[in-house]
Length: 471
Image (cartoon, rainbow, N blue to C red; front, side, top):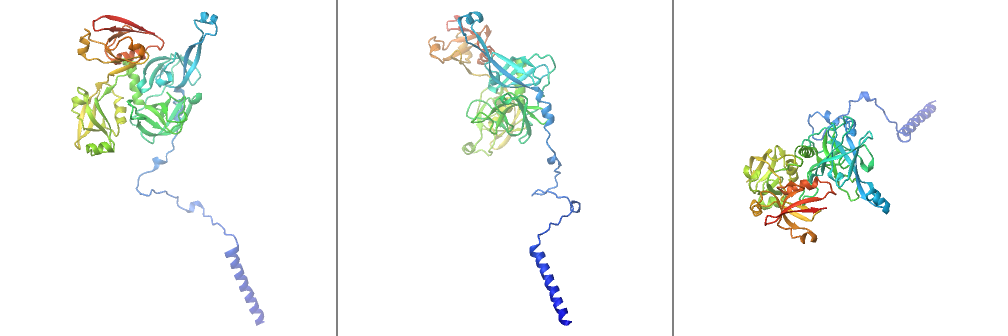
């Protein structure tokens, strides 16, 4: 009996050991599930902890409102050209030379009033013999060019529709922020009513600071392609904050960066065209550039951002306000000025005689000035179609011709014009319209149909007047 009990005990012990080994090394591990309600909700805490309410960061962005309220106010702009291609002698006499109507280019436009005013890019309509605008409901209208601003790539069109039109209200591009969501609305690749989303990735972007153009674009990563030019860049409220204008690409298609004319600048240009017939540009009257490490070192400047004033034009608004060479412009009307395009972008939204508050650094001390903007007048203008360059003459020079107005022919640009010996003569009028400055000449020529001739009224040093006709 004792031997039996002993063997039984050994058997039980061996079984326990075997079962334990199986549980520990052979049986698969089972996952223990704890019901969610038994655990407190997980919280994500920033590395630098504070008690800021993060609810706003969790709010979802809804693009549907902006899309629905803008897509019907963006139009398809088609530019037609007329070519004369007589197929035979009969066609030539029957049609005055056979005419062919063909599309030269397409783009987009933005309706800005219910009675049919449309803003687009100048390059969308430049050179057109005829313009056609198609709405999102497929209705088409002929468009009239009201005015253009080629240097800003803005044009204003007008259509006469048989209904009140949907339009996009202007927003304030100055308060648009980097990182803010935006929509690009347009007609890329002839795909009408296309909406793409992105963010503002930069502001006051100058694509080439070495040229003489005062560019100040809004940069976005919303996809923009050929055909989007002249379309709308809108915020999530459906407000117009830019006119899509350009992309940087080696392929001709979108690769990540796109650029728009700020709405404040476009709005000001449109208002000028409607009120004055051309753009009224206000200027500070300074020459200078963006501060860089070289200027900081050369002039011992205490700041690394701003616009360094190298010279001030005599009798300009800046000169009269007391601005000096060596000043650094750091702020205008409360807007930080970090580079030249910040300055030009803001000043281009103002008019002559507007008063702006300018904060400058002078010998490391802050000084506030109130500057009345002067009117910009171009000093020279090249009339490429004719082959001459004109300039604004001094009053003393005009007196030699017994004139109180006119512009001087500065140089001949082509061999043909050089043969006429026109250099030094005064242009007193064009097409019967008196001209006083190179700006007057520029406006008359730009507002004239491409194929129309020009009648230029000239005066020589003997006071003899003669007209020259240019086809």
